[in-house]
Image (cartoon, rainbow, N blue to C red; front, side, top):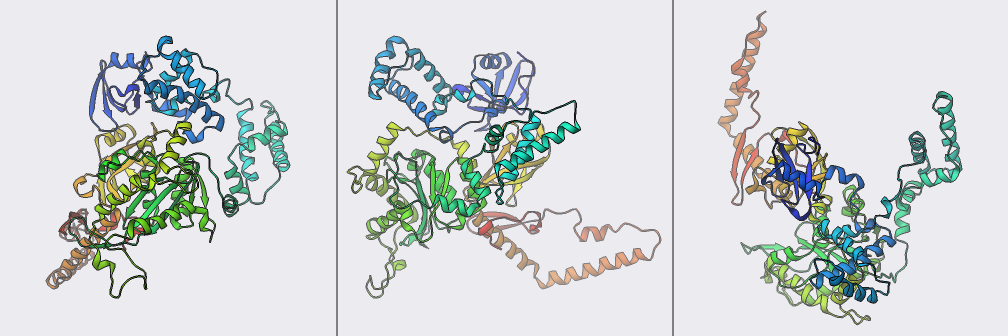
Amino acid sequence: MSIDLWEEGVIVEFSGAKPCHRAIIRSVGKSEVILADVSTGSRISVGRKDLDDIYESGGARFLAESRDFGELKFADLTEKEQKETNRKYRYIKKLTELGVTKITEKSSVKIIREVASEINEKPPHWQSVRGWYRSFVESGSKMRGLYPRHRFKGDRAPKIDQKVLQIIKEAAKRYFNKSQPSMASVYRNIEDKIIEHNLDHPDKQLKVPNYLTVQARVLETSYQSKQKSRQGIRTLQAELASSESGIETTRVLERVEIDHTLLDIHLLHDDYKTLLGRPNITVLIDHYSHMVLGFQLSFEPPSFASVCIACINAFLPKDAFMDAVDSDGVWPAHGVPTTLVTDNGNEFWGKYFSAVADELGSAFQYCPIRKGNYKSRVERFFGIVNSLVLDDLPGVVRKAGKCGDGYDGRQEATITFSEFKKHLVDWITGVHHHKPVEGLGMTPYELWVESENDFPVPIEDEMELLPILMATETRQLSKGGIRKFVLDYNSDLLKDLYRRDGPGTVTVKYNLFDIGYILVLDSVNKVYLKVECEDFEYASGLSAFEHGKIREVARATGKSKLDNLDLQKARVKLSKEREEFHARNSRRKTQVTTSKAARSEKVGVTDIKLVIDNSKHVVQAELDSADDDLDLGDWSVD
């Protein structure tokens, strides 16, 4: 065992979550290694020999090494690889359901034959199934443990010289251009570059690859990237949206529609029972099953933040969410869609959400203008909610001429926000998902379950998914942590990064609906670490918008105090004194210190704070806000 195997600042992942799932190495001694659980920050002491034994037995891996191969998502696999993965999973699922955890010939052969008969194939050898099961368990009981390894077989090193590959790569940039040069001209350019190199380096001759080799290398990119570069983004979007109505899907998550609407009902505040108004809802609907994949309900206007929160609700299992809203319904829908269909709202056209779609591996389709049937599922859902859910509730908004004289939904409102949210969830899971779909004779729930049996949906890792669905920027890491939203964020894990890397720029992700924490990228281990705000009690659950409003009140209150007449006179008097001090120095050849002037000007004093009690939060807001402007995008309060 190498003495350098365990190094400070490296993250280790343990199979079976013992001693934990993921831990960063905090310090290394001769006989003991101190770890810190990445999820909880708790300190774990493990004997050096015990840790060596875990690694030797395959129970631990270094993320910095394993990430070299990439962690493919199910959507990244080819159709053939997806089918092979599902085939393996059918056997594992059956064995697990029957309680078989130790796979032997006696315990598994009969079950394997039953599954093979169901899917009409020759039964695999029981030892093969045992190998699949072991890989499945070692991956944390996730589908990725069953991914085929064909792509990793054989010699994957390129047969072409690296210099030639670099020349081809540079030439490919010219091919993917709106001027649309031909492949023949690109090949001639590559040929010329190689000839030029050979003339300049007679001792390092390069071989010119044939035309087909160059063509294959140049076209090693997605169809979407090629069309975007050569035809333009508008043309690509028109192409993706050019399909006619009557869209057909064959399985869940193949196509998911997302949209917003302002609900026709007025709601009250949970605690104060004051009128809040009409909430906005962002909904994702699975096209195949008609099932609601997830939603976000709030009083924020449609934005990148609200879209991402809706996606988090949709893509992850709903157990924790159902507990939070106190609903006992069953909601099996979850997973990342293959294609996400949106309208032309700004929140979908921005660079942030485009980056999210790229990281998720989902294809983007924009709804053509004036073609509402392109998102028929979600548009129909909004109509059903208005007619079957809102129509008989107090506070519903009625159109002019559709209600009695003097009717005002605002005066009739009696339902609180949380009560309505629970009512909506109960209706979705108890009624909507169990009502037969017209023309199909099956309910959305039945369609989802049937499709998932044939095409299992992998459960997404929350700590991998959350960073993707959050706003991103770079911040400075200092010995005091990271400053964002005029708040300080720090933790023991962040100090581990600082000890390893020192001060510098780091990538930070944050949720505009909850500034109580941020996620900081560990660039060595390629994972995000959760870092809480030092004033967590104030910031937890607070949106950036609310925080901005509170700071605005704090600044206004501070300014009003500075407008006091006696205070203004005192400032003028001190200013004149400073001018006299400086004038006195100007008459001397040898200058003397002006400590009184420096003290009056607060030189070196930059952290003057004002405490404001606005009945909800006690806020420490800096009077001098030039240190860090609050960047809220379309949430700006300035």
